[in-house]
Length: 242
Image (cartoon, helix red, strand yellow):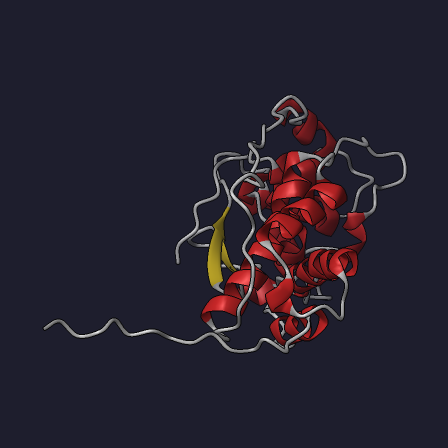
């Protein structure tokens, strides 16, 4: 005679949407921007459904309807980002807390994102901008490192001079998830990043390797979006090791 299947009872029938959201968001992630994005998506969703409703009473279809009403007409990237936040929250409720919770329905599927490669800044434009003598060396270093490493602005701005490994043309950065990773820059052009860094290191005001003010366009400078080019990975490839 076969043994009866084991049944795990779900609990938390009294847990409201607001309480479930607070429990999920209480331990902050390593990246405050990620936490803020998750909180925004989840808060808007529970406001649409009713903050004081029991989590167990909400159906999959209601979750799908709320997502469609909030972000149905948004760009694919916006839809995917907010859908992922709600999906992660509901999965956590079911698997970690063992609460009776709905799921994101199959029809609210992830949407295909099309990369726009037409806005990439030409390398000649970058070099022309970096050859200007009226722009501080630290700002040029930031722009060049963003272009060559495809690193995020916050990662590169967090680097100090002593973090730079000039011999191996790399620097350690903390990624959005909190992991320490390497970004590399190119040395084929001695006027490039590696050519500039010894001059930055020699600066008596050593400290930050790049200027935080470089986040704003320099007066009279080319308005091309250097950081945007890096983010679209048009630079020499980003080689990250975990």
